[in-house]
Length: 242
Length: 242
Image 1 (cartoon, rainbow over the protein chains, first blue to last red):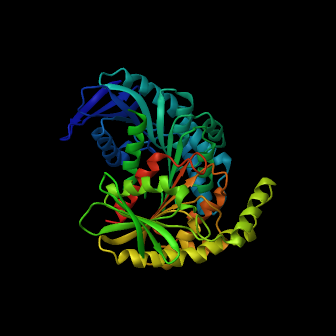
Image 2: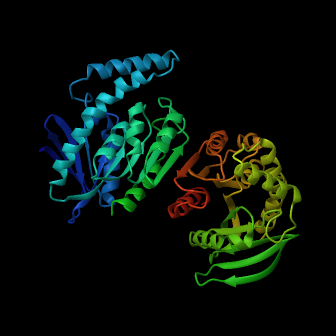
Image 3: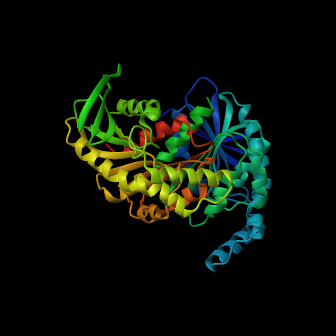
C-alpha cells in the first residue's frame, strides 16, 4: 500500500489516497488516538464521480469514531476496461430499452467478473489497512455492489456487520452465497428503483443466513435514498462495531 | 370523557384512565407546559394484557415531549364480546391448524367489524383529547391493528403521520383505503411472523398512496420487534410531529 496524497479537513479527518498494486483507493481516518473500527465503503464504480457522496459518508462516520476506506471497482474509473462486462452492460441496457426480460446470462456476465476480481482486492486492501497504526477492528462493509458485498461477507470472517444496498441485479449464485452470511445486516432497498428487480431484492434479503437482519425499504428511485438512512446506518454500525 | 383514576410516575409523566361512553382508555401526558403532540397507540386488544408494553412506549414517547393515548378495542378486555368476530377467530385458527388457506371471507368477518366500530371510537376519542388543555397537535398513530389504522388515516385528516405494524390479516377493502392514505408512514413487518401473510404485508406497503413511506422488516416472529425499532419510531415521530 502506497500513499499518494493526503488532505486534512477542518473536522480533523485525514484523507489519504493510496494505491495497492494497480488499485487506487482512499482512506479517511478520524482524529482519535485509539484504533478506530473500519468501514469499507462500496460503490457502483467510478471513484471520481462518487467522491462527493463518499467523502460525505466518510466524514459522517468519522464523527462517530469510525475510519472508512474504499477502492476503485475493477474496470471502472481509470482502471483498464473489462470488455466482457462492458458488452454485458450494453446487452442489459438494450434488453431494458426493448422491454425484454433480463436474463440470468446477462446478469452473470455483468456482475460475476466484478465479484471475482473485487473480492480478493477488498481482502488485500483489508490486509494492508489493518496493518496500519490507528486502524483497528471490527470491520464493517457499507454500500454496493451487493453481490460483491455478499461474497466478501460470506468468505471473510473479518467482516463483522454490513449495510447492503439492494440496488443492482443479482446473479443466481449470489443467493447461495447469501445463505452462508451470518453477520448482522441492514439492507437498503429503494422501492421504485428503475434499474433493479424489487422481488429479487426481497428474495435476497430472505436468503441471507443472518439471525439479525433488517430491511429498510423507502419510496423513490435508485439515487433517492433518504438522508435519515445515513443516520440509521451510523446507529447500526455503532451497535455492531463498538 | 370521564377520568376515573390518575397516577404520577417519577419521570413526571401523568397517567389518567378514562371512559368515553362505554370505551375505556388511558392517557399519558409529559410534564411539559406547552401543548404536546399526541400519539394514538394501537394494539391488538386487551388493555390489561397490553398495559406493560403500552406504558413503556408511552413513557418513552413522553420523554420526547409527546402525549400518548389508547382505548380498548371493540369486543376485547372488559368490553362486551362480539360473537361474530369470536366465531371468525375460531374459524381462522382452525384453518391455520389444518394447513388450509385463509379465505377473504374469514378475514373480512374477523377484521371488518372491528374496523367499523373502532374507527369512529378513535375519532370520538380524538375529539375529546384535543379539547383538553395540554394536548395539542399534530397527531400520530402508532401500532396495530393495521386495517383500523389504515382506515383512520384515510378518513381523518387530523392524523399527520403513522407507524403501522403489519402483524395481522388485511381485508381486501383495506387495500383500496390504503391508496387514499397520503401521510408519511413507517411500516413495521416481522419477517417470520407466524400469524401473518408476508406477501400481503408487502402488497399493502406498496398500496399506500403516501409519497414518503418506509418499511422496516426484521427477522423474528410476531412479538419479536427489536428494541431499536422503538427508537426509530420515536425519531420518525420527531421528524413529523414537531
